Amino acid sequence: MTRARRALAALATLGVAGAAAFLLLTRPASLAEGAVPANHVADLRNGEVMYHAGSCAACHRAAEGGPGAERGLPAGGFAFPTPVGNFYPQNLTPDPETGLGRWSERDFVAAMTLGVSPAGRHYFPAFPYAAYRSMTKADLLDLFAYLRSLPAVKAPARPHELPLLAVAQRGVGLWKRLALGDAPWSPPPGRSPSWTRGAYLTNAPGHCGECHTPKDWAMVADESRHMAGGPHPAGEGKVPSLRGLLAAKKYKDVADLALALSAGEELGYENLSSGGMAAIQQNLARLPDSDLQAIAEYLLSLE
Amino acid sequence: MKLSKRIVAAFAALAVAGVAYASDAYTARHEAMEKVGGGMGTLSAMAKKETPFDAAVVQATAKTMEAELKKAAAQFLPDTAGGKSRAKAEIWTNRADFDAMMQKTAEALVALQGVKDEAALMPALRAAGGSCRTCHDKYRLPE
Image (cartoon, rainbow over all chains, first blue to last red; front, side, top):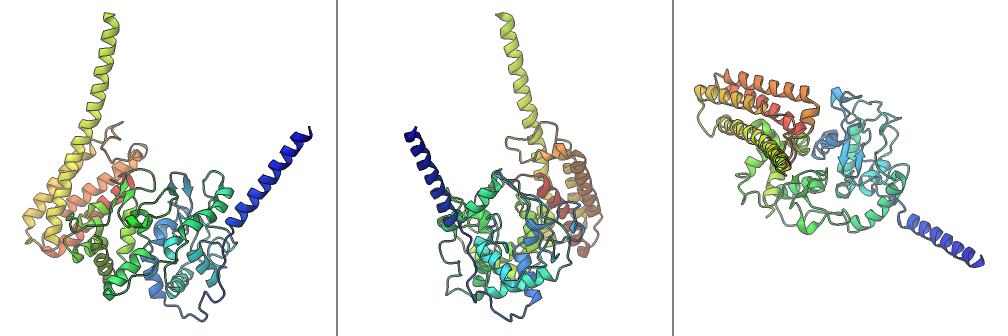
């Protein structure tokens, strides 16, 4: 009897210690003092470029027929399917109750660079802060200002359809230890301004690697296979490699790929239509031509 | 014994016929769609001014594309998803929407046949191609 009691007590102690360790290891980070520059003068035009470069509207689009859908506003509600369940990205319009209306610049920078919500909870990495954390502060603040300039739409978020939602959400802290351990990415020095711009747009706001770079066992991007393609994250089919596009004769030159990004299947570039790429291509089509040329120059340099 | 053999043979024949039915439908619509894509290549080269504008070629090419698209549309028969096919199952659960999209694309190809001058080619082609994209986005699996 006493032995059984002792065993029970030991088990309970272990359980408490395990839970404490889990909570400690998964504690959401907070932004350092001075991480957000004060008195930033927002450039709405640049914010709009970032909005389209990041294809925010592709995942945060309104549900079909839902609030904001007819105006193409990022009110959330459209399902983001993954093999573990459906995510419902949040309303990005400035509605105070259901959108970003009450967010501060600091809240936004913390969400985009740490993947932590204003309430101090982890965002699931379906929201690609692993890439966005490499954006410049100026671009982040311009993007925030642009989102705040959109018409407000009241659209309450649908809860994600995931098993063990609360535990899984806290557990994201463990994933962050693996995925966000290194310093944020920055473009390698010594390349042309256009290539450097293309590399930045592709890897930071564009987050192309989220699908085009395969992930390892822990769902962390395997950078040794940067942009080498892999299984489609939604579960069926493949994501093509973006390496060696010239050698594979997928595109003739920079101008050809820039046109493909701008026109997509409207001019017969049919491999840009499936697997979610159609929405991304149509967002990229709204970038200045110089940015599309820059992205094309960078992508065609990947061997 | 004889009877059971016959039953087995009958089931085997049915299974073979079933597979042949699905793969015939897939092959037929795939080949037709490849021809639509081929026409798109011809006309986009012309729109990009890589080849000279020729209204007769536009008309004939767009007419072929329309006919091939209709051939393909008729081959999305029940239970012919899977295998090499990139057709999403939603085609059969949202059949009315899929058919309406096919119809809209066919109409865009009819409009393309009416292009008489070079300036009108680009917008008419992009309208038709955009219609292809909308449907591929919704109803075609990634490779």
